[in-house]
Image 1 (tube, rainbow, N blue to C red):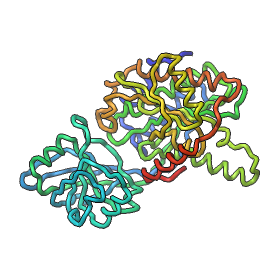
Image 2: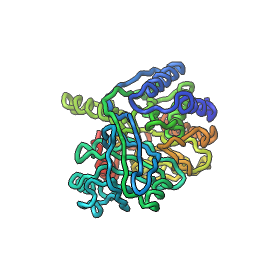
Image 3: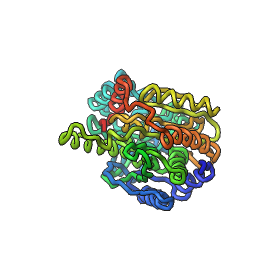
Image 4: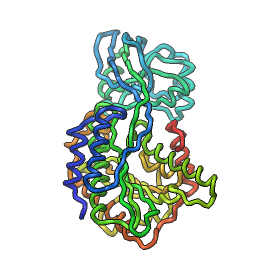
Length: 437
């Protein structure tokens, strides 16, 4: 019944190697969900797929060319939800900026192709300036040398609120060449297609034997950004989730355990936000009829989230949103088991946070490794991962869940999110341009 790093590694390989890239709304993502569902059912769990709508983008063509004072093509990755060009692209003079903070966004940027390595400290104000002085395109230089350009979506929320600007990403080395060589004029082609698709969470449940009304959610997202295998982010976390489901199906639990493979995390935590939204809306409707009603949201007492896992070389991180005793429990277990975790009370940009936004305490476990610099690029591959790293987190999660969930005589943690953390959660969603669930 003990957690097996080798079994988890097999799950990871199925997703990252056999199926491969799993962007939201694609056949590969659906294939992944159906395989996870079949595996949950094979283990004997009550499992289902919960669908939701997701807004996504597809890249049809990409190209970045220097036209003056020399001619060259620069490899690039398009951010499909930031904006699109026609087949001929856009052409403009090059303007190198340290960042796109509002101080730099003046009339000088209008019609130019901005080349920059920095973002903005205040995206709302910066995007307002970009709307006023619209550049022809943006070339984002990766901040880390010797890493591939990231395959990120871009932000449809900010684009719809302010302005759409075709945007591509290039490596640090290629960006440096553009600046050092004095590139004066460029053409940027970013032909994209936007659409609303059906996506899904995969949910499996083990009913509690003594307190089945108390629900604990354990999950990790299985989707990826475009074109990447997503081994560490997050086939590893999904694999740990699935192996924990096997362990507790055999072991049993006094409380209900709900294992979720989240969809569309990379598009803005869409799967977990939808799950949290449905819980909140159902709870509000029930309390309108009976303000004393105990709802499913009320009874969901904890979320354990697993995101970015499997790196052989690295350290362990736990970020907690919830009462002080929950943080203390994670720290004490770390000391007791002799496995170092850097534990803090902080928002983690992953699927535990939407549940905490509707009042459910969460613990997010992750592996901090140098190869995380390769996340969201084609280099997020199996070769950096190993069964032992998956086992470290899996065994820790197993012990935590066994002690405080499966075997605890009474629920040990207050179901609360402190006011300071509530404000941090609200600020996180505001800064990301996302609605609270």
